[in-house]
Image (cartoon, rainbow over all chains, first blue to last red; front, side):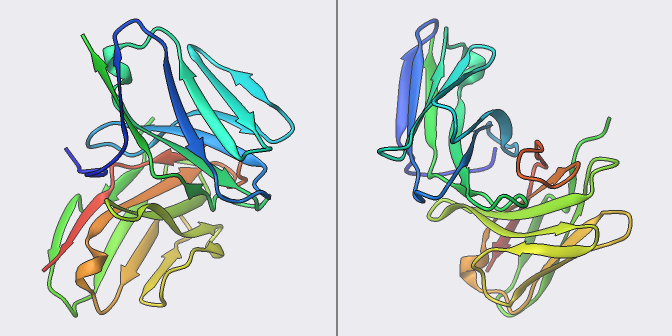
Length: 113
Length: 114
């Protein structure tokens, strides 16, 4: 598959455990955020988004938390499954017009059997 | 429905040459964005086209250019290739192009400059 990043931070979790992936974003003016999942050989895939007027948003097995004070996002994955193994990126946007997102460096999630 | 299609999947070019990459968005999508992905710099926004007009541009030199056709298909061109241009080039399409419209990514074109 494609090499996404040779030296990404890696999080290893046991199957069935919860995962927490963290992201520090760069611009205090950012007001819209997305988490993406990228599997080997594929493009990023949208997971969940959150606006800056929210602190928390839940999806199916995933929760995103936003702390604007310290410019921090986290993605929580409940009951992690082998299919969750991938690289996860946060992306921020401060331009309420268009798709110009700034992506974080990514975290590789490895699910252990 | 068919996803975002990028061609070619792999490309090898020599320094100094130019290259054109193609992206066919999902049918009905009017916005196409391009990103460069490298191990060192990660995912970086190149530009976005909507209805044949470039409406956002990232911080890349003028050697990187693009265009969008009336059928929303998009091409990006890199002239005078440098070794550092070796990367995975990703395009994403979205229905309306607003930031909260989900963008769908293609599998990318792997460009290697030798």
